[in-house]
Length: 301
Image (cartoon, rainbow, N blue to C red; front, top):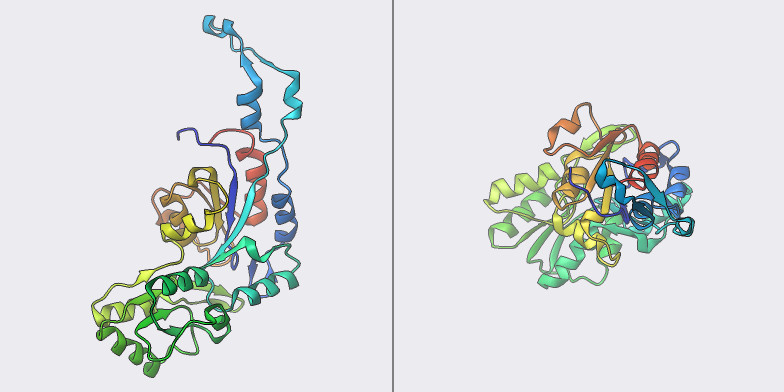
């Protein structure tokens, strides 16, 4: 693999990676603290900036000499952002849940697919029929929804019944655009795996012979928007998540590295479902953080 730029940003999935509903992944809080204080020395920058190669290397010697001032070159901090496709609750409810689990995360560090969906609704100036969980509605506050001329669909188990879906179907037949917050096949709950919105989006696409505009992971625009404001390019970032396609595959398609963790929705051999495969597959978020600290901040990939 060609040498990459120094790592500057880490994107982290939430449900399935840091927590599963109201239970934290073991060790995730402490690992996040290690991630958040990445004022460690970036040895890859350290080596490039401070190590001079002896001219005799051209004669076969590989000796290097390190300048004493190298000790002053300590850490460029790594920016951490949390990216999620969750549509089960508003951003504020999600933040409250994370704080109860003792995660030290601020609101401006979280980028959700609900935010991306709202941005698109405002851009298109449409009045959406919101097929989302009632707890997610605060993120659409102020959006006009009367006499809808668009359909926005996320995870809405209480609304996924024939009458409501048929209403959406008729709007789409009349030309309303279909906006899918994401198309995950399934997700992890405490009681096991459960259907995500993807099957319902696909059913509406099939019935109306239309194609949804998807705004969440794994769309390239989602990852680029999440990085916007960090000053980082995709080649300077890495994604950690439990979804091989939406988290890892999506990130790698835009130029990032991807780490797949074996928690949440992960199932055996998931890493074989995408090409190229994940940069790394490991047991859990703490293991991913350890790898970043030990390898990605000490050498080029």
